[in-house]
Image 1 (cartoon, rainbow, N blue to C red):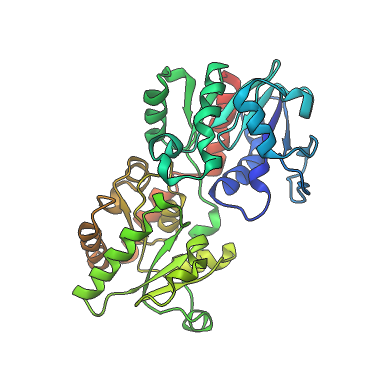
Image 2: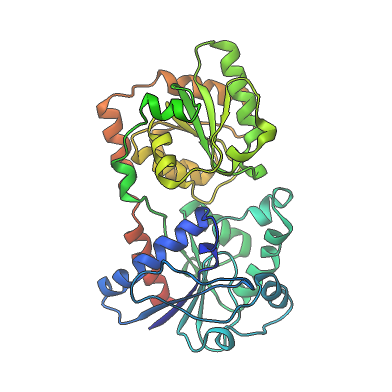
Length: 364
């Protein structure tokens, strides 16, 4: 079986979808072997500039010409040309890892739909993401099989697009094993970065669905009620927004290398992710793997991923979120609690994600 994946998310700084794609590409050869399936894995990228990937796993080859993603998406939103085989050659399966499944001549189409934000929260996404509202239904009409990161998204996709159960497969994301071993930062590490020693952490973007406005309001209320409340550290893309600088008790990290991000999360009193919607919520599982408590909104995927280990609050209720933050600071955080969080996180592995993905390829 010849499998080709869209690896465009691997270009540039890797977001959550980029990390998903990187881990999947790395794990697929082993997953094929575990399933007793003979096959080869290739990747392609949609871009007019550069586009060569230099860190592909052994045996994984890059194919295809340099073609701008926006041009291809515009063509595919209007019709079924060009077919993917004319770009990458023959393939048995083409996996669109980031919402976009190109038309094919004979290859089986598989597309990952990470969430339905483009359909259910359209006002919060970019114009490029709004194209998914055209591209995903076109792929579904051609018979594409859908992969989703959580059962919550599976239910939403089936309902929104009136799909049968056999058209959608859940392939939960995983946790890099290094998260289970990460140590909290030293006082010197924090001082060198002008960060507080007692803090809550948010990891994410400035995407409106991340609900940063309500988080900042809730944190301000927490501080008003408790002058000893931890500060709030914003990491990831949100940590680069200088417009947030100067708020009392709020610190910006800028973009952090993976190792620094893990260290930062490991030292937090809790990770907070109050999103309006999520497809999975990878920072939640990563924080639990590091033994840290989490506070989330009640978005269905976050309830699923955090389980009983997450304090929750309605996404748009700043008072309830402030109460949840106060509660998590009072919760037990001893060795037994940390072991329980890590045990929960161990349920999520990239090898299992790849195994379930191969199952979907074989059944598509």
